[in-house]
Length: 446
Image (tube, rainbow, N blue to C red; front, top):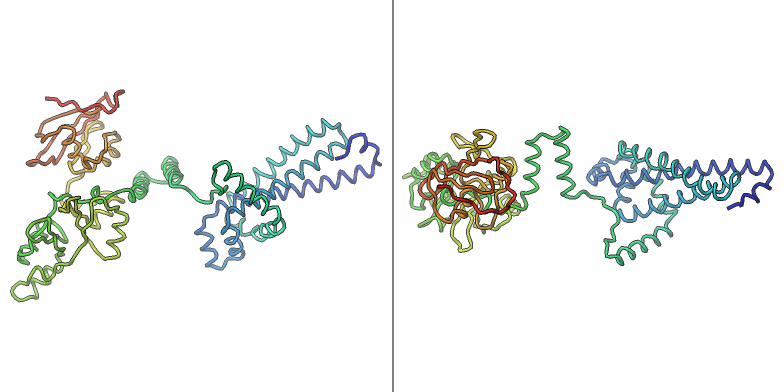
């Protein structure tokens, strides 16, 4: 760096030449700063699936882009090293130029704030905004130049790459200083933002959220419980099996030997009708029974769906820890976990809104669905899965029609009971919800 007293002794032509060369150098460095800044945004905003698609389509420079993104850590170090060298060089040259005309302190002050403003405007903000709007095209355009920069700065990149990993390991941080992927939580935030901005409809948002919770759901939460299962004995006639399917509006039913704890397979109405029409004597039910899977109630439904697809099964049997039949699961049950209830014929809605505070809810509805639909916070535990289970768990006994109890400002009235089963309950959200004392035990109201 020149001292002010020294540079003032230079001929006027020399100072003019130095100033012109310095300004040209700064302009070039600003361009390089913009190049590296926009590279970071373009490459790390470009989805990997688009890169693969461009490579398959034979888009020029797509292979170079893929090669750079194959090692995102090395790519980011290249960009950071290049950008920092450029910005530091720019500051040094600017300080020298200002030193020709100003005192040392003034030169440092002017260079610091002047270069900061120039870099922010032309080296960061503008190029990054452009890269965000033209991610794909810009990444393809600069790919070769960035690859050349990697070769040119290779020794420095190797050194800083190693040093970065050592420092991150020493402080207990991850050695991966880049984040070329989107987390599940970020996707959920994007979905919620999309709904607020009107890009995604409420129904679409609900379906997307169900997809995220699908792989955390177990078979017990999805199954049709044992009490609601329509099945036929293996010694039943074909005609009786057809009547069972048609009478309960089912395409297929399980077949058991002795009782429901020994389900031997499944029959569908199409095979039943064919056997009845074309077999002498009406046919034998056991001849058309197709085997099925028996899975534990804790089976993950995401894994179960893949297993059902692989084995081309439409129905599986769910067993409890003692090996007894607890329910069945169909492909329709799986689909409903994502798209919501698919009602058939005279099947009742799970929720029937009476007014803003009051809703009729079927007893077999999952307690998690109740909380989501009514925007309340009834406890969810391992002891129960449904609204009826919650009522029995809290009451500690069988309940009767007309009984009412309250939990944390939520009034639950038993609307309809069939023997020991709660078919329907009326839930009213009172003005006292939510109470300040959480986890309050329900108070039975006589």
